[in-house]
Length: 149
Image (cartoon, rainbow, N blue to C red; front, side):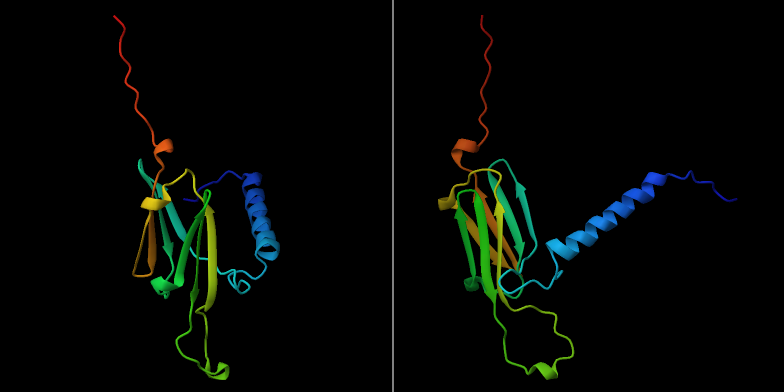
């Protein structure tokens, strides 16, 4: 038996609006899509917070640890580096070339102040993991309430 579905005109309008937003974003905000100009390559990151630290994981495959620079200025964390091409192959011999070479940079604001002196950075299997301990001033403090007799 056929099911009757109530028509909601705003459902199509919202999807049209989302499509227009996507069109403008791809045309003006990111006009070249994933093909960004040199020096502006980006990469995916995950950032989460525990009681004592901020953890940032960045996917940077194909990069040697010595080619990655991590800096912290105020509350802005910056990760930058360079992916170097292994050997030279003439352009006309390529059938498909999708891997990117060159510099990359990504800056993100941290939600709280961190203690830079105790920060740790580890790189394994293309994932850079930064462990940034929170500054003592921003860690939650527990104040016990005593009943007055």
